Length: 111
Length: 117
Image (tube, rainbow over the protein chains, first blue to last red):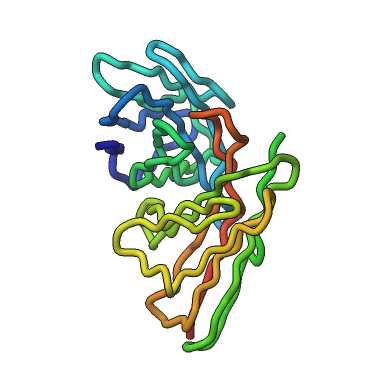
């Protein structure tokens, strides 16, 4: 079946620290992979995506590389800011635009 | 870019009443929309797939008679929580994608925080 396993939080970092949030997946077929971000009180926003193996998605300083050999799509950022505090969801989609989400990782960045 | 609008963003209702949540795709047609439910500190769980002009497809364990879905047009899907109870209190969120492209970005509504008292 299709599923996403995501690093549990919460994660607390100091400003300018390096961020890694691990995400692995299982999927039937050839999935596209996504990271969504949810700021407090808001809906989900697409952060980045990758549609095939070895693709790298990037946005706002965040990056994630689609690794088929390790079935992973880890999210990284070299220097986090207070404004990055949010919940991050790893997700995959195989067909029909149905998404499978990880449990979410709450990130708090302190000044 | 594509925008999905969900309304209302917050609603408080009395136990036993019904609540309707709307999900609109503002600048594209969506033959399929999805309804998710998010419990505190948990991920989004797919409730049902809303298909324009036909019956919705519900995930296992979701009561179709309690969560009524109507997808009457290519830009509007509604979720009605009937005879709401406190355990229905949750964050409900819809999504839609441009059709017929597969594996494309899903656009999410802002979500609806339902509190049943």
